[in-house]
Length: 185
Image (tube, rainbow, N blue to C red; front, side, top):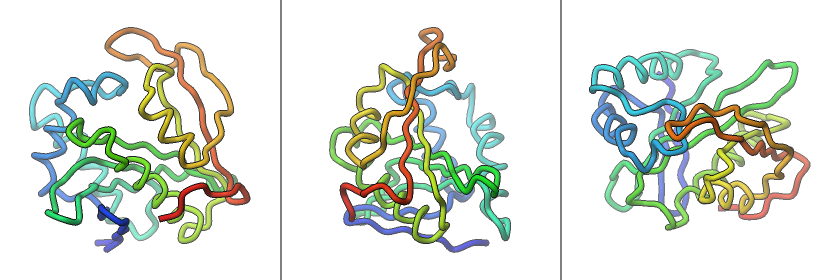
């Protein structure tokens, strides 16, 4: 198994394991974190297990194209969220990132800290050219995070996200390896 660990000032990220199932199920079951997520709330823990098992198997591959990390606080090893990196076609040398933070940890700077760390990892370790992220236009928290880390809003996709509240537009963000990085941790 790959032993990738990223460390920030307050967090550490490692690839998810089956032992993370209970936390991931709780995270996916929160109505607050489901508001802007297309995954939906799982009907039971077995559904969550069926979702994360392919993620765990992908993390075991020699050449990972879809990284899924658990985010933990350094101070007490408490799980606070998930982070994903989906590597695209090698020719384009880019990836899309996503994250989900437990609502108990919103508005405390964790998402910004972790996204900065992932950007550094993607450019410095994975040698990517471009990192992309999208978020629903109503997701003000994620919009602030993506802009704070130096990502540029490049466009708006109309009614692309099937959310529980109905179809939502999505803002598309990106940062290039040549862009200045605002907040390094």
